[in-house]
Amino acid sequence: MTLKHGIRICIGALLIYGTYFVTAQKLRAELENDIRSWQTLNINTFENEQWRVTAGAQSRLYDEGKFLGTWLIFPTVQYKAHPNLDLGATYLLEDTRSEAGDDYTRLHIFWLHANSHWQLTEKLKFSMRHLAGLREIESKDDYWISRHRFNIDYKLKDFGHLVGLGASTEVFVRYDTDEVFENRFIPIKASFKLTDRSQLSLFIMMQSKRGVGCSNWENAYILGQSFNYKF
Image (cartoon, rainbow, N blue to C red; front, side):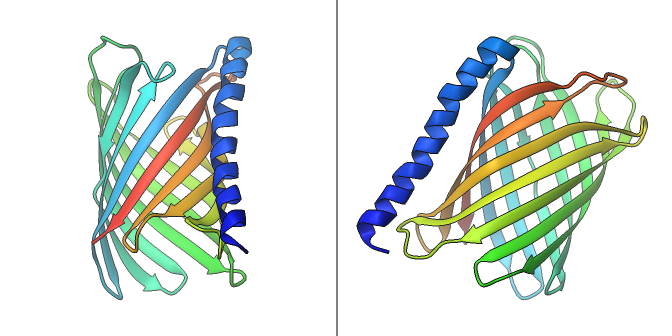
């Protein structure tokens, strides 16, 4: 693979990202769904053969990026229990609002998670992430939820800065009502190696949610950027 072909692949990934934004704008006109942007920062602060400690933060822009609807921080500790299994715990602090100008509602979640992964081929990797957590929302009753993500990643070589492509889907279950209330589907994710210690991922997501006892799902279209740095 020549450098020219690598550049074409990088440009192609960005065009997919941009084309989806234009398409989503048209969808919004028909479905009245929101276009949102998520920005995530993950910092790997410590790692050895058994333990990994990370600090994460995320902001979410709503209404076509017009206002900050959600911000959250989530420190995580992971233990490498097996070559194919990581166990971990996360504390998540989240402030969210539905409209610009409204006060934020604070949310606390304490996650326990199991991440299993298998290298199917030299380039192809399949992984699953299962989380169970207690949601504590101010002025509301606490309840338990779980999340279940299924992910596929394909490693690329000789494509310049583009080092991988992936796709995933994740379902959310709340146990006070025994309902699936959210799904996050990522049809494409492109990962770019910036330096030996940093990586940028761009992804497209369709987020589907419904209220308690509702049968109708509401959709939002997410353009996401995730920056990862390892000390």
